[in-house]
Image 1 (cartoon, rainbow, N blue to C red):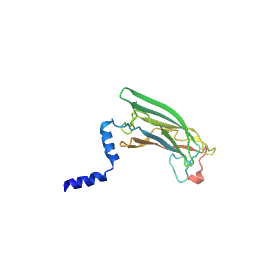
Image 2 (cartoon, rainbow, N blue to C red):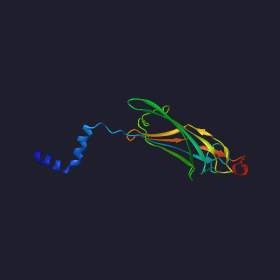
Image 3 (tube, rainbow, N blue to C red):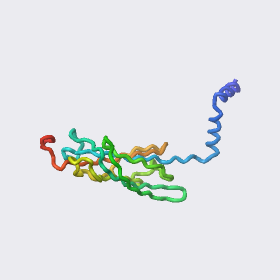
Image 4 (cartoon, rainbow, N blue to C red):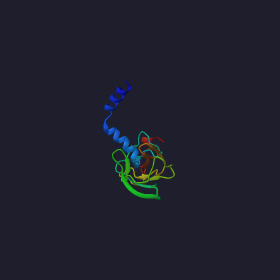
Length: 172
């Protein structure tokens, strides 16, 4: 009886599955490269109170510089990769940087001090809201997945203010 059950089960398992099991034991594990995203947003702080209020709005077309330092380790070397890029916010005020896979970067295992990104305001797209408020940020919320080595660094918001505060709109 057990022999028949074993035969039935063996016939149900695809042969490709058996080859995958054998291949997993005969080859070294596949390297999983990091998938890193750095993102944040820019808004107009209409009432100049350094918070997003009901009168605030997201700024599309704002220029932001992103500076990052990432630690990379391979079996032979330990390196640090540093770069700076400019991004423009989309219609929702969001800027985003997708960092290509780099051998040796394991973002999900690194502490916050090992890999670091900062965003800085470069220019506003609005003539009515172009005085820098929060000019740069390195504060972040990190979302990490060790299993698939995915990291999303969501930087704190940056903002511009109007040159004059509208007391009628915002109150005293």
